[in-house]
Amino acid sequence: MERIWVKIARLSRYTYLRIVRIKAPAESIALGLALGVFAGALPLLSLQMAIAVALALLLRGNVIAAALGTWWSNPFNWAIVFPLFYLLGKVFVPVDVTPLSIAEFIHLPLLELLQRGWQWLLITTLGGTIAGIPMSIATYFITLRAVRIFHDRRAMRKLERQRRVLRRG
Image (cartoon, rainbow, N blue to C red; front, side, top):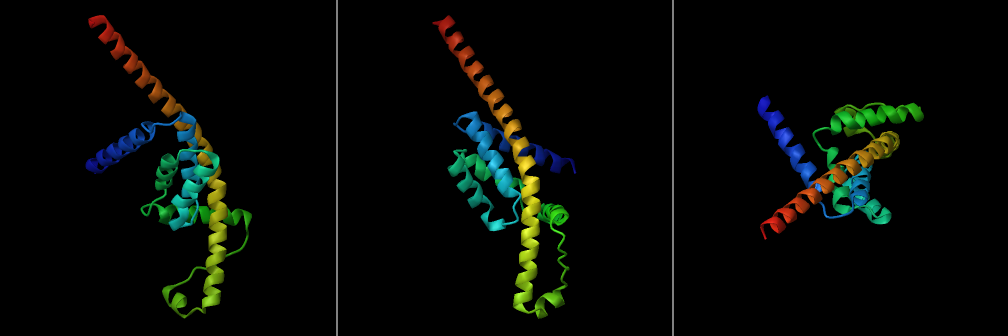
């Protein structure tokens, strides 16, 4: 079990360094990552990254950070995240979508299947949007602070190296 936590810690550190080392203004990186987190909350699985990149281009956020931001929502947590977003969406849209068994799914007429699918998608999209807004706002401010601290420390190290070279020379 300890080995899994070591891998998670290493992956987290790697992702952090990838984000803060992007050569762009801190505001652009933070906005891009926030837009990616927002798009990751949408149940449009194959379109999340495209939506994040389009929003980043439109709002002048960093495209790479936006693409990275969508990866918080991944196949390992979809089974947990999307039902929560569905429940959140149902608070605002009181339509009940009845669950389907495999046998019902196979024998259900196509139009009824599409209607149930659209209801689920709309409710989950609303829930994802409602959850995605505060998550993306928090992501923006946390990322902005982290990137600024990293850039400031890097600038201080560079200045210190230059001072050492000047003292030797």
